[in-house]
Image 1 (cartoon, rainbow over the protein chains, first blue to last red):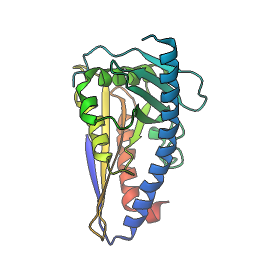
Image 2 (cartoon, chains in turn brown, purple; image 1 turned 90 degrees about the vertical axis):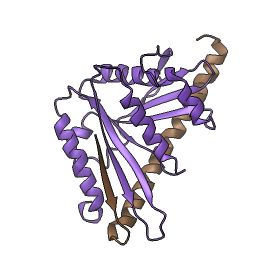
Image 3 (tube, chains in turn cyan, orange; image 1 turned 120 degrees about the vertical axis):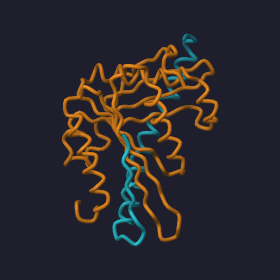
Image 4 (cartoon, each protein chain N blue to C red; image 1 turned 120 degrees about the horizontal axis):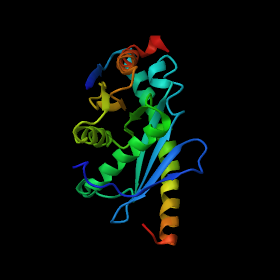
Length: 52
Length: 183
């Protein structure tokens, strides 16, 4: 199921919506960075153990 | 994509106190980390108890980052593994678990990320017990550079508050449209 929402230019909310998603992106970036560090650590451990 | 392919072995990282993290490595040495974060959307969703009370932000990363997405899509076992991890996590966190996602749009690749979630859902094995509800939010800009955002959630079909969760996502969409007044 999918719903589509359109926020039109000129609507005073459009800039706030952009800011909102930028904030979501910043917070997402923190999670991505942490998971990338975990993935790198996992790869290192996995290589060291040499098993699958 | 065929989710009936055998998943790769996956490993749960028990060292992290904040997130539930799973890792796996593919036959071509690509490493994936799947994170389930109970705090990711809390501050936005305090008016949405069905989405929030058992809600977890779902994030998927892959190393190396520069990998060609077409190459990834060729490996069906990646998707069957992600599906197996999602089921394992829901098994441990409970049938009321709601997996919330938002596709990062900072590099303008949010459409392919949204497609990833669509693909996984569309290829679930017959008789599966999952529901996906998604929002596409187009923000039209005066300069003509529009921004499309993808977000949504996955839950079990049997989740007893599924209908309320969908209503809450619709309410969230209304909040986005009326963002200046709601928050």
